[in-house]
Length: 146
Image (cartoon, rainbow, N blue to C red):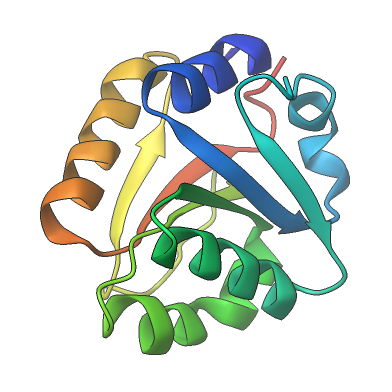
């Protein structure tokens, strides 16, 4: 199990991902309830397209950004992320809340499966984003957060 508060403190406090957006997903409630406005800014979106636009804009402005999505939302928007972010070298971190059987089926992203040792995974994802200037996707099991 991953403590949402510890996950956010590392992601936002240590790695300095300061902007988060996403389209409402009940699975992220534990994470939402752990948001600390002293280390991050969260703006909920009215659609996944709006959320992608906000995190992309923040990233262009030099703010490390995170897009929170469910697996169906990610499947619906992943090609836009490729068209906008991958091809234009606009790095964002996408956190996909998914079942443990979810297969994203796309090799155009660098994927990281978040496990209990989330710090090492977040470090690897952050290094990838910094080095490649591309988006990466963290697959977070929907039952992992406490």
